[in-house]
Amino acid sequence: MKKRVYSSIVIVITLALLFVLKIFVSDYFFDAFFAILACFGCYEMSKLFSKMGFYNNQWVAVAMPAFLLVGNLIGVHFASTTGDLYWILYTILIDIGLMLLGGLLVFLLTYCRRKQKILHEMTVRDVPSMSILKFSFKKTLHTCICFVYPAFLFLFFILINHFNELPLSKLEGISSNVSVFVLLTTFLIPIFTDTFAMLTGSVIGGKKLCPRISPGKTISGSVGGVLWCVLFSACVYLIFGCIGSFEPFMEIFPIWAYLIIAFIGSIVAQAGDLFESMLKRRAGVKDSGKFLPGHGGLLDRVDSHIYMAPYILLAFLIFAV
Image 1 (cartoon, one colour):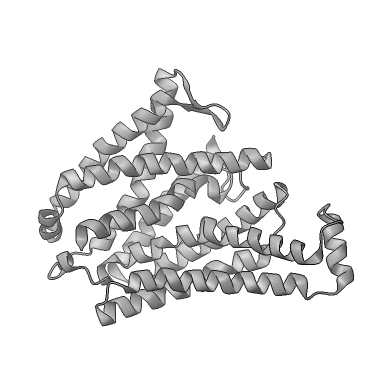
Image 2 (tube, one colour):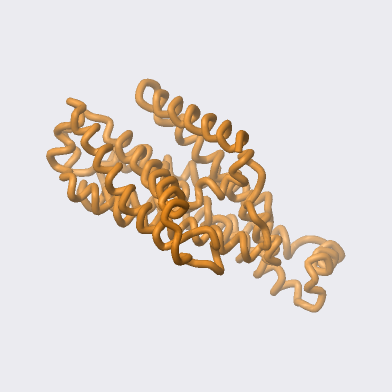
């Protein structure tokens, strides 16, 4: 328990420091932070896949977030300089292209090795009768899945971090750093949901939500997590509304829209948590790793955020365009 508390304190201090650096120095500190987390996430996902029998190239999987970071920053740059909102779509296409190139690299690294080495790996993987071509394709596919989850989805945080630089019509003339508000929302919705789902479930108890996937989660906890998340999200909105520089943004972004985003986001966060639990159960492990003492692996902490990032970006874009 002490390790969990100490780790939580370190996480809070780290995020607080990054927000201070973002506001007063540069957005790029958060960019580096997200890329590092994505690399560790890919490492843990690669290990989970290996335990499930889905052989993959761990090193390429771990390196891919660095290339996706570059692709996202290129997209943000051209979106801000050209004023073309379609660069958000182009950025996603750039990322997909990079992942396909990464998949091609994995295929070549596997298929073009000496035959003895390939056959040895196939024996170790317990697929000695499979053809070398099929083995190479499967290893490529498994590695590409590691690219998508978590790296590709998680690195939508980069676009959120640079939300102010996107050419959004409703943000023209607004001087406040809206990306701080959007980024904080992306962090807080899963935190509110996870915290109060656990507290509500432990107090009320009741029928299990998905006993085969996550025996500890209850329906009462899930509902409580959503309701408390909406309530505390309203408090966050009102606090930012009291800040003078954010008043123009709050005028074009009503509280009802924010609460709808929080409500759906809380459900998305729980779905992400359940998906990660399903992967761990399939792999036969309790935690995705040992990156955070008392918490388990990194994916155990960011599983909700992986799906939250693309959802929040899309939700705010709908109201900001």
